[in-house]
Length: 263
Image (cartoon, rainbow, N blue to C red; front, top):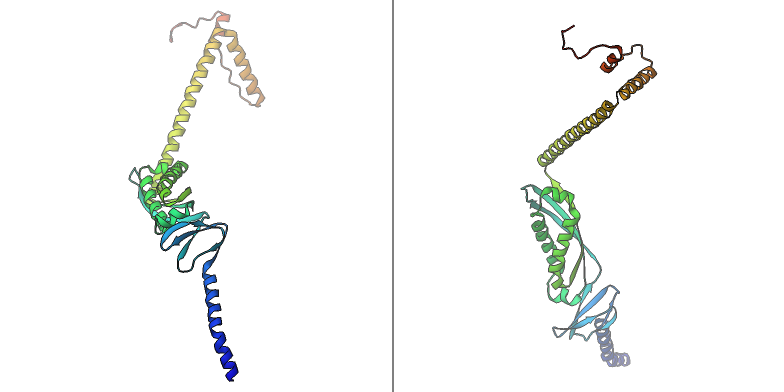
């Protein structure tokens, strides 16, 4: 027993040293994936960006902050917006962005996710508040582009690239929905009346042109009468109404220019 005790006592320092070496190696070795970068700080000072692959750090001297470079999806909560024409709506959006500079995203801003989210909310309210409700509903692509440009320019200092902004929902209260429905119905009625009036105008113009053409040749009117009779006869009617042109009376020596009541 004394022999084993002495042997264990002699190996104990080596075992402790081995455990210490294993702990140091475990702390010093870092493996970064393809989409990750490591921001290295040596004694608190920035010394570079490393990765992907195997990274070796000096224990207790160097620290590393992992940064994910993949595209992130940020769901902007619904925001109460007063449009330019004083309509209250709730608008929600989604933002796609990614880190393009790991150094700035770590050093220049404490939490770039929170900072981008808050900036997106304020920008959404600011931009949409300058537009009417009709523009929010009909020109989403242009509004998305305007918001994306503003966000991208402001997050560039943080090493963030805003790729896409999409307005998801524009929620309107029930009273405004009914008002919009009445407005759309009135607009459709107005268009119907305008189209009907334009049709009457075009028909009158064409009838006037036809009358001028027929008045040049009296025989053309007779041919038109005969064509009308042909159409009526084809419908198998028992009664035929035949208009008698006043010009035909001239062929029989009838005078048609006397005033009414004279013989």
